[in-house]
Amino acid sequence: MDIATTIGLVGGVLTIIGAMLYDGSIGTYMSAHAFGIVFIGGFFAVMYTAPMEVFLGSFKAMGTALKKHDYDKAKLIIHMSEMATIARKDGLMALEGKEQPHKFVQRGTQMLIDGADEATLVAQLKDELVALKARHTVKQEVVKAWVELGPAYGMIGTLIGLVAMMGNMSDPTMVAKGMATALLGTLYGAIAANTFFGPMAAKLKNNTAREIAYCEVAIEALRGIARSDAPRNITDKLIARLPAPEREAVLAAA
Image 1 (cartoon, rainbow, N blue to C red):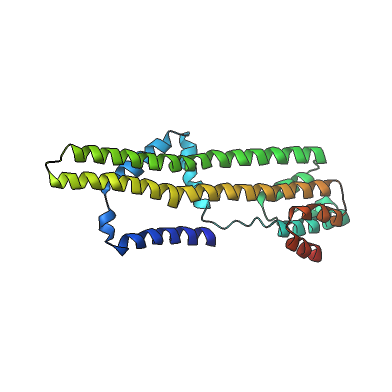
Image 2: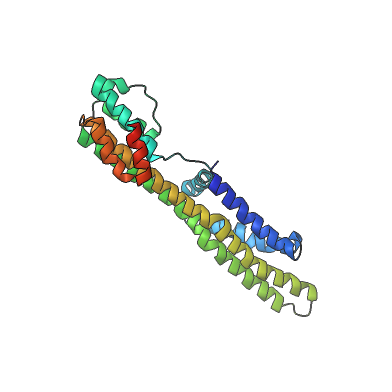
């Protein structure tokens, strides 16, 4: 479980609930009519922004936002330096069966063991990285659609509520019901966009950027191993991607 995501999500929800309870009760802010317009209407609107398999896959992608992902480049550089030492001393076959920190690293290592040359290795791994980014992007676009369509459907709820209110001015009950739908539709749309889907889309984008940067380090390290570069030379080249404090720790461990 990712601590920042969990604390941020729970904190945001509790802040809104606390504000609701401060001068009233949760029941005051409940409207099945407004909820249906925003979330059920929004659900179907988002559905037709993408193919069904992508739409359904977006829910799995949203689940990954709550998970902790280890994309520690410093640890990867130390690991790849150790692999370079083994490969230089005992040959590439000695890497067979060695546990890898990420499936992308495992894939590249297996290609080395199978005899892929540097050009083939780098070209294929970069193609896989492009494909990974494309897969992530299409699902993130579905999440972003919620950010746009949630408030839009909230506004639709507002307009429906106002029309209902204006059409029943002689009935105080219907006026109150229409006003509730009008106001709560906007509220639900704002909550959907800014408490749930907006931060989640940003988190998924951040996770993708971190994973790509991590895999790029792996590609450069595997390229060095394919060329039989000295482990220290591989490390010196890769630490340029790290902030200064982490560089010292990697050099000390190398």
